[in-house]
Length: 624
Image 1 (spheres, helix red, strand yellow):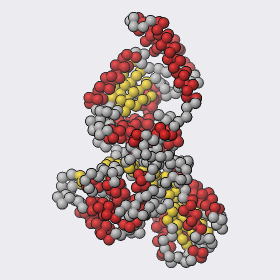
Image 2: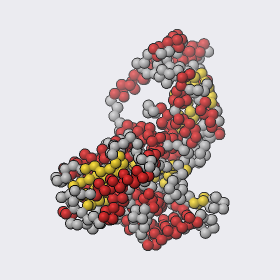
Image 3: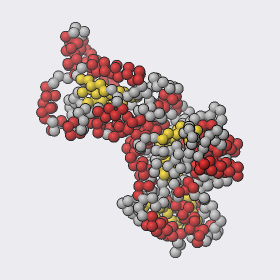
Image 4: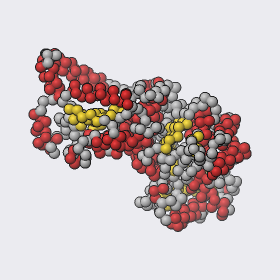
């Protein structure tokens, strides 16, 4: 449990859920989660409420968790009267009517009895249960703390109070079960055991092979340049067409919404012509092909069944009966299953749950989607404590995908930025991937490679909003077929002047590319090349060097929509400079083009947004 005390709760629940699925434990009797809590954290941290909220939900239930609260005023120097409004630290459990057993920590047999009751209750009723062990801390918050500084009266009483061990020992002697000599022997034996284990720990070195066993056997560590960062992700055209038919063909007796029916007919035409594959269809192809290959897919998030932008429609709703139909679960017999869950209005708890699943199950594609990318702010503790650092801290890989809608469309500060800069700042030691794709095909490939490589890494994806229906943000079906793969950098696609006559290369990532492309076409510019950096980390130095070397006489611009103190600029600046130096390019350093540094991620006024957007596009394309 990291120091952010309750952050681990739903991670544990996700692991439990995954292990139950592996055992086909639908009765939820073979795997159980036990959470250890401190009293101050149990009463004070919102993740506890999120954990209880998940306990009865169909997509997240685990058949009950035993919560063991060590109620010993562990919250440093703050008294209970200053840290909670309710009489008991365990009162939050009443929100789901979980039974709460209060027990005296100085009575070990009563504690064991309470634990037995809790275990039997959980197994019988498949619900959460809480044990509130009322006790005290003898030496303060840690080994060097002096609790008498702040609670002198209480620690005067505690100092005179016999230890739990001594109280229980005297009880056993009084009952004639143990002698004083035997108690001393047991005490010395246990102290000797602790000393031996402490000595052994000095020479302990983790064995990397230990964490690649069981479900993880066959997978490998991913450190080093030789790791397969691209993967083989294209599939046969016949499989693409098979998924396309299932995707666009609802049951004949299903009363489907007319607007969705039009969408399905449009999808059918995409597969008939092999053109115009949009973002949501590409995603469905990634899911469907993986499922046909035996890989289950789980996607959760707020309103993700329909999709925040009404783009996904993973579950269709009968307009008469409200029966549900999942097209991708009806591709072929024997396929793996798609699970799409509308989550509670929670970020930290649900993201922790999905991360926990990936720790136990490396052979499923697991995704969490923020309603808007900004909302991942509420889950920052999960990102910092687990996703970005879990492999380095605990030798535990995760293939979790985070989908974060991102892009400046004049929707205001809370609906524009997924805070790309925060993820990039966390990048190091090849710990995760951060990408901002511009084509449906690249989105498809980057999802499939999560499973089709020999290792697992978290993937942070800036996903679009306006590009979901942008006429130019489409791919051909051939871009998904055998022989195609993910492109970390996308070259200039238009026919311009000779490469040596190109005066400027504009590097960008994500949606702003289409704004640049439209204005370049509008102005008839032929000597400015647009190169897209699709993957920001790991930094695609070789691919970018190849592109920049094509234009030896051009200056180099980095263009972004985000403010200068946000987005990618502070991350890519020196990396582009190093890439230019490696090919001895005359440009030397890239030039920044984008919004000025600001405190707020974006303006709330559409007119101001449009003006800012036009200015940055103009600056990027105007060669002096």
